[in-house]
Length: 348
Image 1 (spheres, rainbow, N blue to C red):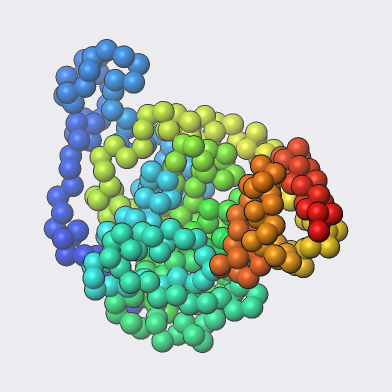
Image 2: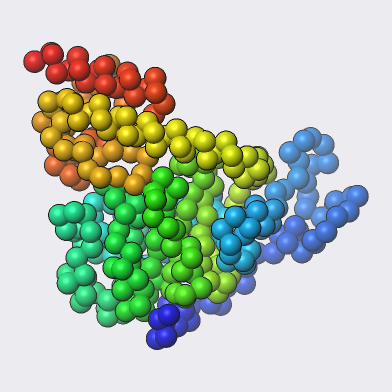
């Protein structure tokens, strides 16, 4: 526990004073026969506003993750979890956040939208945090948030848990551990530490392992105090009825989700083995995610060739020299990728 951390020292003054919007569905909780309170159309199948607190989803996640419902925030994608953290804790034009590069690009974008400076600390050779370089920033008052993506995107590796805990214990700001890919990793989630560290936010998503990228639902797990702040600043109906129903259907079918994860992990191994046989592949980085970071002879040419063959990957050459990032597809998709790469090799 970080005994010197005080959340009241971090929250923006306008957020402390904010009186949140009280929606019709917030003011009435329970069942009724007639609803004439929210100016809704009385006709249609989707004419009613969704549950603003996503209570059923939180109840199910509470049981699955072994946390209290009041420690869970449901967002319009993980991007809302990120954006609201800036709005709650960072004063535009004054405060700063810190990231470890290369990493997920939305941290930068959201910071720029909110007029927050980003301090970028490069990861060391094995894509781990350099605590010696980080140390001076742990005491900088203007650095309000540190983002740690683990497993990291685009590198795929899990960040050393001892380093994360060191930061949590020695930093009086907010630490956001982004676990978008945690379901593909053998490492334990940091959710187990939200009662230990009151400055910790763990972000997860239904877009990856749960197969609901089109639904746009993200989750934050943190102390009740932090979740209360999230609920204060969020839009009243931030997750639609259709999206909530899709999440609930998936939560009620965890066996199928687990089977899909196992299949992806198997395909990850098979794809890694196939790629390792190709002469253009120089290195395949270790991964705990549903993708591989692969160093090739010429990332730009490889990427363009695959586009021409209607196979789309990510060119990460600007982040990690001559590297491409390949998402693990199904068996047919992965086979088409390998066949295209073999044709690329014979083309020169």
